[in-house]
Image (cartoon, rainbow, N blue to C red):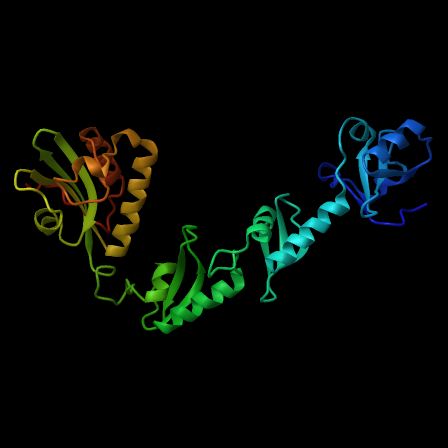
Length: 328
């Protein structure tokens, strides 16, 4: 005899085919009925094998498959009650619950107010249902609407949105410049303000040639340090923009030309991330050198110099001719 109601299956057993959960004609000891009633259930029937039962929730009437051991030693969870809570949370958060995510139990598909479907964390929806969204924010966004909005912003400045960032950074998108056909990565924050320039036909720092450099400087009483950075004019950067105190002795010790400021920025950020991840003990806190040099980061202990030099060496290529001379 088939189940008259849908049978909720525990998460760890959902990979089993439906026919496995067939009714089983076996006796049910009276003491099991007493245990089930005490825990808010009625035993519907034996199913699958000698170890499993179908329990009917006395609160919502849903059927849930459980092991006999679970009934006897723990409080069985009702699949119907859980799903009802998920629907209630979704309604309070302003979305509609769809199917559960088959790959991750903490996610589900929800229909957003715009009509599009999105994969969201169930816990996030529960928090929104309890606390409400932050002021001025929904607590979630539609990926489709968000992409359309970014495309509209890009078109305002003469660009076309191609797609996701080629390097996988969620804060960047790949754009196509309508005027010259050049494509490049642009931060989504800059799409709002238009504060970006074409690396192909523009004339700002983003498109102008730049230089990746390493600088060594000696601070009285503290010792020697090295700085990794990029600049269109490294010499000017050293003498005028870093705010070095008069008693600080500085010299440029390595340079590598970059085709554009945009490329230099991307490479510099990658090198700093690698140094922080692999040589965190060599990073000098900003506060330690604040009275002597005006930078927020990018300063390292002198022992990092050969490491940085090797990293710059690894970037050498025919299209970026290397300046091997030291500049004092």
